[in-house]
Image 1 (cartoon, rainbow, N blue to C red):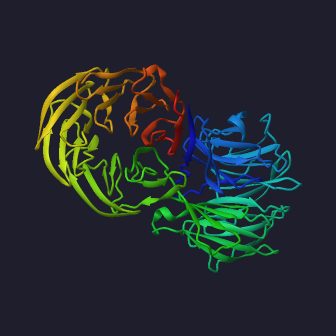
Image 2 (cartoon, rainbow, N blue to C red):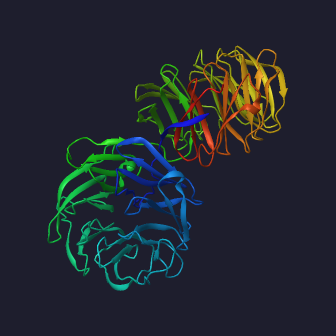
Length: 610
């Protein structure tokens, strides 16, 4: 049996020049945001308490809790809204096709009976309000000519809806049934976010013209604005009211968030500026914010979530971070197996500690993309899409100097001899390259198309897998490779090869969904019929005592086999990662870490089968 022990959540998908909308549960400290096709629910009091909803067919854009906290409405780029329960199994209540383009914002009415959604679409339908259970329209929304970025529902009766968008307008509707009442054109750039105060007396709109304007909620007359003194110097992407309606939090591209005191007459002045922690690069621009009870949440373009305390604004924020893109490889440090390093192809390397979660990013001096990744005690070795192999020394959380070597063609696979880690074997399209530290020892053209490779821990043997599904075994003497044997069993190109920790066996996987465990001395098949995936095998990992092997595949499953039992008595973890599993590692005999396309990292606990 296996059970999910921990999930290290991905961060919200962000986009340069656009705000993102995160929302909170009215009944608890849980917030929700989207990444790819997933909707993530994370508890701010315990960031390891994560739930993921993965039923959207298209990338999700926004998700919101209903006023009673029992339902979530989430929307995606196809204009579909799904309404589902927050408890057991996320039961789907309804699915509606609302707009013809992407939905950028949606909001529940305070009685939880109606939903308003806005976004992009063909023709005039850029905003729609509908009954949550039947999808019936409740009003006509004219008056916008371009994409509508945000909408809000007045939290008290008489109900009102206000919308804003790329046509610089803030539109006000009365109802239900809702109809156009009036329009304001006080902003001179995109209006990014509009929100009613919790008591329903005012609403505020913020814009890329660096202004925030406050209106009366009943009549929609302009009351005042956020003072330009000590104001934002960049586009304001998001705004959120404090629960008592006396303050607002804004997030801006000038890399800061500000807390404003709003007076009764509707003017705001800065109470505190919250600087975004980081190096001050583009990734530190803030694109989203939320005032959730005592937590002030800000989200940066790089995806880092900062949690400030509302009662003590001077306190340093708690940082949560993670991956935004496909996590392609995992490494577990031998010296401390509780430490997990994960890397995604956009060049981000993150350090996780089992039981604690996020523990920092490894900032390399050269932030190049990563295709292959390997780690030994004090060093990480990476290769990207620029033909270079990088060796970076690591001291705690800091990366030291980096050496690089250009091997002349794009690296396909990278393997280190664990006992003498300065020796590395890199495979390219036509052959392999042997490296000692950052120097090329030899470049060998093998005469077939190479797709995967591995070097034994003592550096005396290399196994190279080809496009034709054959495994070629070479002995390494000095700088040369001598072919010893060719093993034929696979019916597709080899995708991964790994030696077992005790070096008595090795395992290989192919794109035709089969894995094979071989005995190293006799070179015979040790475990056969490992044919339970339905798509290509991306990764495999051995348990520390070499008694189990795990395979991860594009079919979203992880399968764990015991070496001395037939393959049919396997253990399958279904749907481990939406979109496919790309990284696997054992941290101890009964813990498997997996990572995948959904940008999450998960730890699974195995219970021994009797």
